[in-house]
Image (cartoon, rainbow, N blue to C red; front, top):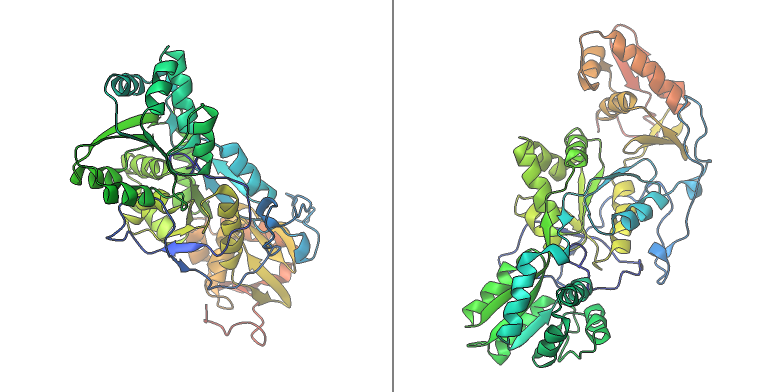
Length: 459
């Protein structure tokens, strides 16, 4: 599982299928990861960027569309014309909350054009310094369990390495070799065999739900079950075993702590609530919980939840990761295969798919997160200009007053001259001044083409 969910699975960046939306936690979901049916989200046009292919074995199944970087000036360099040179995430800003493998995830996003805001919401306690793990290891050596469940490869390897550092490696391996050892997936099976051990069984589904079903069918009353934890407790799993009469011993192979530097998390929160982010990625349930906790400490929880429900796409690597958000009625988006590659591919579909193309002054306009496509050319727009453009696009073709546009500007003041200044810069950045018309003594409007675009007021 990534960060407590997907370490035990192969991350080959292969092509995934349609992303999944979940409309809240299910009553029968015990918080155990595993394949389950979600409704495919297929509504909305796929606009802008290159459509991600379905070829397996390559990184996200498509080639790298490396266009020129957009310029900062009014008419500076832009991505060359034609949507084939516009990467799927050009113009979008994505927050990354991961502590582990964050560089890999960030690189995948940036190669697709995204601007990445990295703010690890957790840090991992080093295993050799973890007194809880040492105590649990000694307890299992002294009092043999009947069953040991290995859930993640990195966790199992780290446990063995930590035990060797404490001088307990041989004793731990001897104990594990004499009990029923279950491996959740093929990657953890490899870690077990690399340690010179052999697993007794592993589920085909790579799901703890299947492990639980097997144990309950066999009967666990009076048995001692050791469960390698992966960053946080698994209450649904543990409670089910205890209800069946088992003694459950948790082995905390790594634990989460708040980040040493909370500044990046606060900056990510500020960007989310002000809609400076288009999406936030979550690769573990603890990361999501930690972000919500920090938002509550700052009095921003309601604002964050409102942003995640309406404007900032919450992309979760799997259903366990999504649970803390769904408990707050946030609809999450998940790839069908719980890996980093399909998570990025999901964003490559969903973010461009949210864009509504407009025909303005004879040009095709797509307003992305922090940039605009004008006839297939990516134009970088300053934040103030994006705020004005979004205000105009909410009612394309209608006149928006200077007073309303002033309220839409970041750091609202009272001088409407700020609107004129920002509007001039916006027109320059778009490279097509006629897209926005000045209506004397009234305000501004998008020059929507009614014959090919929507009727005025249809937005």
